[in-house]
Image (tube, rainbow, N blue to C red; front, side, top):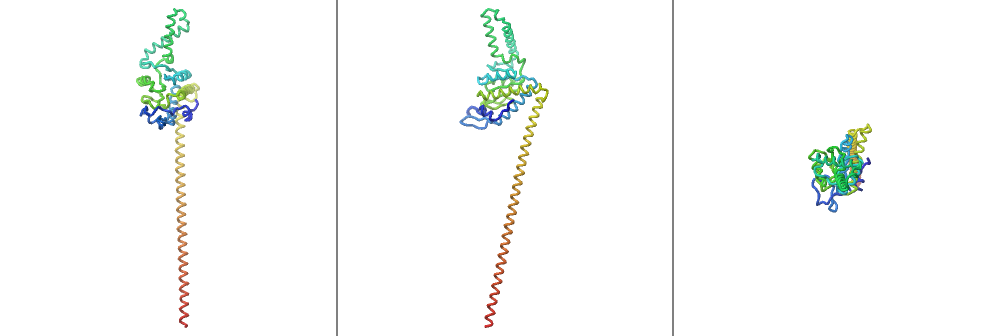
Length: 318
């Protein structure tokens, strides 16, 4: 999986939120600021949370868990479909049908109907029917394919949901919450992150931004499955290794900060010692100068007294 950096997010426009008047206060921890009345998402926080979400996705995929991709918006539907197919995961790229999770028994009946129609079409049985009846069955099959084609091979309730724009897909989020299904969600500044287990704060409208999230999740799924298939490093080891690397990096930063503090203190002590020595030298020089001045004054006084004594002797002789 290609590493995602801050530059990739900037180029994709991940940092652009919605207008400030439409913001949800619950998103304040993920907002960096605003510009031209548009909120700016904190990309460093987004990158951190995205990496955490991808680590969880790898772990789920390595255990052969089903992750349902959900994105019915125009900017997300095509990418959701393409990447879910690549990752061999179920998806919903059209309208979310109410009860798709909470009333899965009824949905399963519709899936069976779709499977039967596809089997009849594959065996060319429609050609044996009257044109009107064949047309009706084909229309029914097309309708079911658009609604349920992405989940017909799911085989049961998914183990997790990956949702693009949790506000637009609120029904799906509510159903998953009722059933206790964990959610990985792209959450914009106007959305409520409540009920989302792994929040990915960022732009959920721009095609390039959406493509970045969805492709990263699909890559993580493919990578997670390879970890177990190769019989090498397990997903648990991968997560543990990532945590260890993070701890090492944190320790290195702490050590560097400690060394920098020690160097600063040592430099300050050196400067203080130099200042003390300089002050002592100055005091010593001042004392020396004072002593010299005192000696000179004493010598001058002695000379004056001698001359005065000599003058007094001459007057006596006269």
